Each structure stands twice: as C-alpha cells, then as structure tokens.
Length: 259
Image (cartoon, rainbow, N blue to C red; front, side):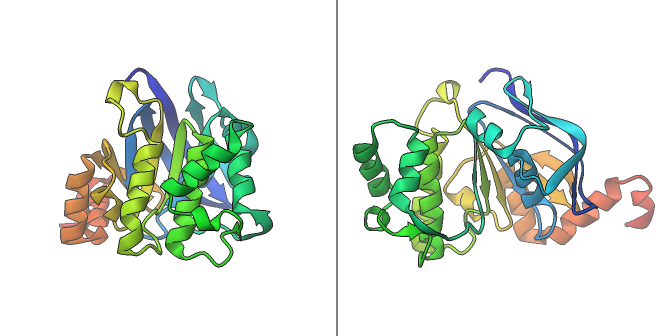
C-alpha cells in the first residue's frame, strides 16, 4: 500500500492552557483503517480535532505530516483542501442551509443533481435534501447526513468520531455500509487511496467495518497497539480499568505500584 501517508510525531496538544495529549505517535498508509479505543474523556476527540486543525486545539510539541507535507500549522480549510475530512460525534444544526446545498458544495462543481440524488438514495436521505442541515434529524439521520457529505467530498483521510453514538441498531448497519464505501472497502487493498481513523468507546462499529490496527488511549497517551478485534475482546471482558492498570504497570516504576 505504499509509503506512510499520515505521520503523527510526538504530538502534544493543549486546550485552553491544559495539556490533553502527550507525545502521540501514529502512522498510517493509504488504504488503511485504524481504530482508536478509549474511555470517555481520554483525549480521543482532542486528537481528531487537532488533526483537523481546529484552532482551540493548540499543538505545543511534535508535528503532523500528511502526504509528505508538514501540516502542523496549516489552517482547517487548508487541511480540508488537501483532502482531510471529519465526521463529528455531535454535528451542529445549520439553520437556513439546505442539506442539498451542502452536498453540492462538497461535490466542488462536479455533476450535481444526479450525483446528489444518488448519494441521498445510498444514505436513505432522499426526503431530507430540502431540509435544513440536521434540523429535526434523529441521531442516525445526522450520522448518515455527515457521511453523505463526506462521500461527496471524497477525502483522502477521514476522521470519524464515535460513529455509533446516538445510533440505533437499524441505522448502525447502514452507517457501516457508508463508511465502507467512503474507505473504498470494495476495492482490493493495494488499489485503495483513502484511509480512515475511527475513534470509539464501545467498539460496536467493528461489527460492520474492518480495521487493520487498533490503539488504546488513556489520559492523553496511546498505551498499546495491536489487532483491533483482540483489543476490543479484552476491553469487553475486563473493561477499560484493566487498560489503565496495564498502562501503570508499563510506566516507569509502575511494576512497583501495581501488582
């Protein structure tokens, strides 16, 4: 699948003067899907927001390399133009803007109407195109709308924040299908040009989307890396408290603190 396309090197991030992420290191190649597990409040969303370039999330150390460029100081819109997209856990309602118009903007001047209809049908949102963005939408409808917009945008790197959050069992399967389409899962691995970083607390999305590599984050640190299904099985059996104990055991002097 080629060389590393995303390299996060010793990334340290502050939010409103408080250090949230500590020396994060992560690498991805084109075509890969990685998943980041962690308890609530562990820093997962902070990592995605820092990668996307939201100004509130200030990088104090380290750097972000994307397709050979150092984008650490790039603005949010510069990163979007380079091919980075994000699906929020709780996207905002946008009054006065129709969903159709947002999808058209994401298509960047491509053949609009036919493609918009095709994407809406794929996301089961045909009846939502003339409604204001996310206004009165259910949790599942909001997630599907976000993914429909990303399918129009076709980013090289998609950052997906808690795709299962607020979603019922009826919607989660369709959301999995949309993510698989976005990440080109129907293509042979060497031909895929898109990659995804998915963050999750529950891991339910792995029932629908396959990932190559998994990580666990606790207290702003990535403490382990491995097969995502094996990591999830341990989390389901023993909970995140076991991950935290493991982190402590591996920390300097940790073996003396935890038996």
